[in-house]
Length: 69
Image (cartoon, rainbow, N blue to C red; front, side, top):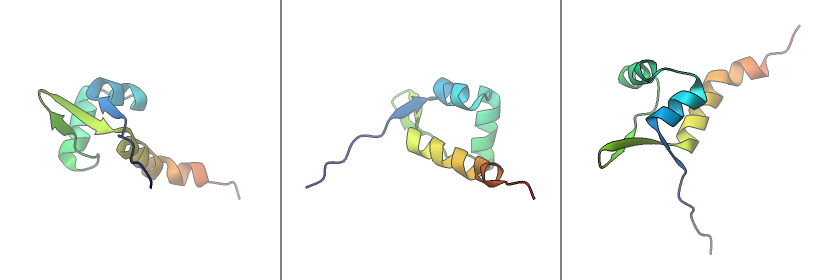
């Protein structure tokens, strides 16, 4: 039997810090549909660390896979 672990939840400020992005830039990306929307719990919004990491991998994957000719 496998047990599911709870995802690590990140507040807006933590997401911005991890991505070196301003709050305004993050909100703009969410509004454009270019970043996963947050989940509201009470008066706070959160992102799953997995969702943030998946976005980073999608954005930086081509750069990290680049090899000189």
